[in-house]
Length: 170
Image 1 (cartoon, one colour):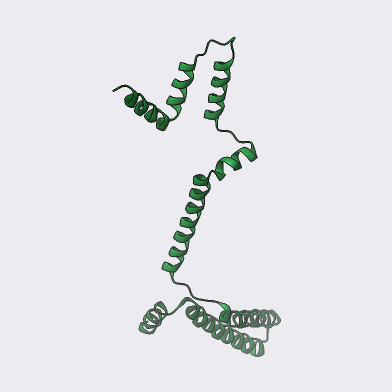
Image 2 (image 1 turned 180 degrees about the vertical axis):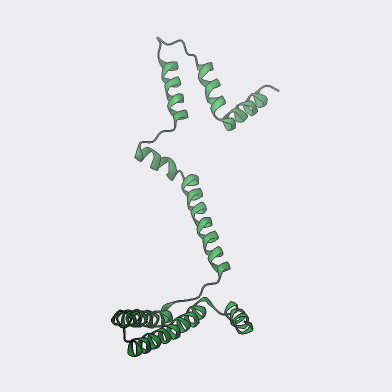
């Protein structure tokens, strides 16, 4: 039991690819043992069913050995990455996506894309309808109502209007 704990402690300190190699070695060794035992059972048994089962077990053990050899052949192409590097990669990717989104918004490309796609926000449609009604002579809406609506929709415009009113009326 103590040997298992020592082996576990050694494996904890190893890289992931090294742990894969060690485990593949262990699996390969066990498959060889199973293969050897199956052959011995097949050679010593007198029962046809047991001999057939032993042959099947030997074939499966050989297949496991081949798979472990494939793991060993593939393993040199595997590179170890540390978990914190994965986290750094995802944080950097998120930061890049946010930076691209900010650049698109700041340069006005987002508006151009929305116009090209044909998506117009509901607030803009409401404003356009109010402006159209204000300009139409047969509608009762006034410029005051239009300005009030626009100020209600845009807090920055409302603050700018208050500042302009304050500056013009001391």
